[in-house]
Length: 118
Image 1 (cartoon, one colour):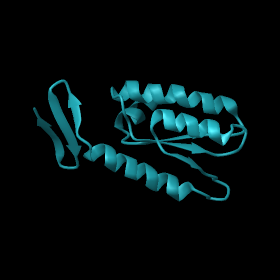
Image 2: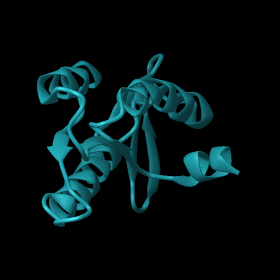
Image 3: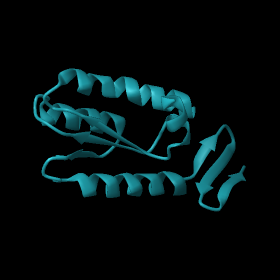
Image 4: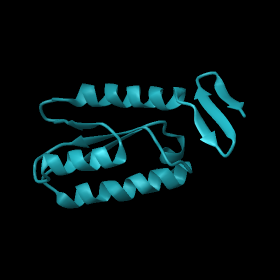
């Protein structure tokens, strides 16, 4: 069932617990699975941090490597939660409006559909 959600999702909020290094390490596997299921090199994504056990500089480094925003949030205090979702929506909008190339074809995905050019 998870593949179906990945296939139809337009953006992904990758969340891990900073007090659980394994959950942080799993982010890489989830990212690769999302890219595989969507058959895409790039997917709108935001990396979110919840509780401290993983150094924030390490998380920032991974976000920079993936070229995605990094936001620390807390479900308990609601700190950063709204910002994480707004950032994800902005990433989706950027992704949708950015022209991409496939061989000599260029395509642009918009709300009105996919436009092809060559």
